[in-house]
Image (tube, rainbow, N blue to C red):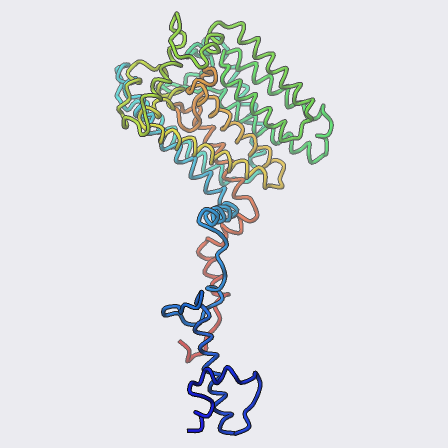
Length: 481
């Protein structure tokens, strides 16, 4: 009954008591302490309310609940994507996944684009697809082999591969041995309907040999002198270019020149030296174009919208027709009209146009996104390594794949002259697919050799993970569950 002496309500009476004051009466002291505890509980319950409104069913707030969000939806997604991209194995998975997706989609499009061509030659409709599938199986074996062998073995393969490629390219120019296809004498007949184009392996040979050469010179600190940077890299590259141009294949020569410039750029060539070599290459290219009526006609067909007086822009214009008729989502697989004899080389150089007609803008943008992901992952591998050979080789492979894709797609879109180069990993042609898949295996091997990636892969092994978990788990008392 004495508790009511504090007032009609406990809380208002408690508010009038100074903090830390003790009532004079012993019984009143115990009642005051009880009221203080009630006030603390009430403040704890109302801590989560805003503007004095009570929270529904809210108990004491946790530290995580009191922490404000860091940003909105787009910013949070950006942060998650950035953290995911910074993981050690991201480049490894992006290279492997994008390369395999491009190859599989290429097989589908080769089958669709080559059926009419095969039937017109009195061959089974799956003739070209079966050859491309066999090349893809062999290329997958080369990819796995290249991804598992160490860098020192890659460097040991550089000189044998270069010498073998030069020997085969010389054989191509011997009458009776080399064969001419599409006006270019760059082929060797292997029998059973299979042909080999040694110039495609020249790209891989230049990448490996040039990377090994520049890495050895960098270890000896010789790249600061321009003569060591150019010799013997540029003379050997010009020798390969000369052998290719003897057969008339200027498209492959353009890609080989891009690889050379990529290696010089990665080696830190001075601007004057780089501009000098580029000027010489541009002058030689201009002279080769001016002296060939076929190359001049291809150059004049950039952005063409009519066939021309003699039909010289037939292929370029019908490539645009195929892309334009595809719409947003295409006419469907196998429903292309241009592959019925209207578009030349529908399954090789202009397969991207057939993909646009049958898969639409969505399909072509997907192919472009896969190539962009592959190129960006290759740049990441080259930029994060401390090994000079890995940096030069990864940069050379990325330059090769991206330059060839740009030249091919640019020609189909009418932005560049038709150079006659296939779309890497996508177009028909085993001679182009095999070295390209080996080069992708190189990128995968380099991505695996990163120290952080090695540690992450080691943690994914079942034995290592089990041992690590056993070290982390503490022993519990016998009575604890």
